[in-house]
Length: 334
Image (cartoon, one colour):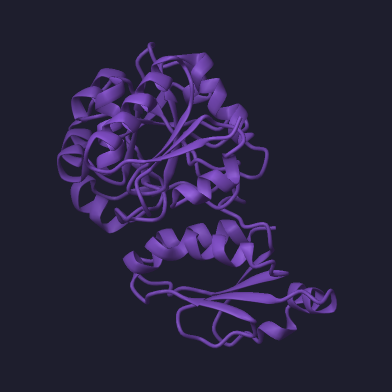
């Protein structure tokens, strides 16, 4: 099986692509589609067999829960056993958008989606193709990133095709994603809100609405995440070793750089403006939103260059950069 890639543009061709995708999803198949964060691999969230196809295609461990994408807040409420005032306030402010809320689940949500947890992660995506697909299918869609588990997330249809093109039937092409990294995940299922994964909806913005947050630590490799995807210590990783280079560090002395040079392999780099010892360098914008939008595409490009390792100039430890530093720290974890 080789995935068909169908552009979703205004007009009959785009409508036909959405209709084909909706039929596949209603039959229990998987479909890759764009959201504003990254491309997702979607399946009917209330069909355990369909959800199982997500795990099989990605090689994802069964203990790692999924985010369920729904068309609006009313659809989210239908899958949650409780809907606290904080959920209503956050949904009003940030949905549709890159915020996922973890809430007690209804019994209709299968264990395969939640990894047996009593909570479900819910999001209303802002991308017009994702919204149109949810309307066309009439289904809630469980949808992790559309790539092999643990690898760099896809922000274009071409990234999906390279990773999963032999595993899935259809990829909807909605162009490059606009946010570029995964959603913020906030757990509202307990007595105090817990930030499970930082994203471009920042901790400060959330605390303006819900008050002080607890910040969850990462799960070790092989350990079940507390209640959210994206919490493994090593994640979002290219094939080549990724090294974060802090200010003042001479990257030529780092062991992976010396080893790559000894093998005759080139070095690649991701920079904010610093000069790093690399044959190929991508420079990203010095603002968090611009950097996040280009991050995964840059890592895909550098990984495809055949580099022996990838040097990344460490982003600032400043407000707005928390999510980006989180992704890079996980990608650099051995």
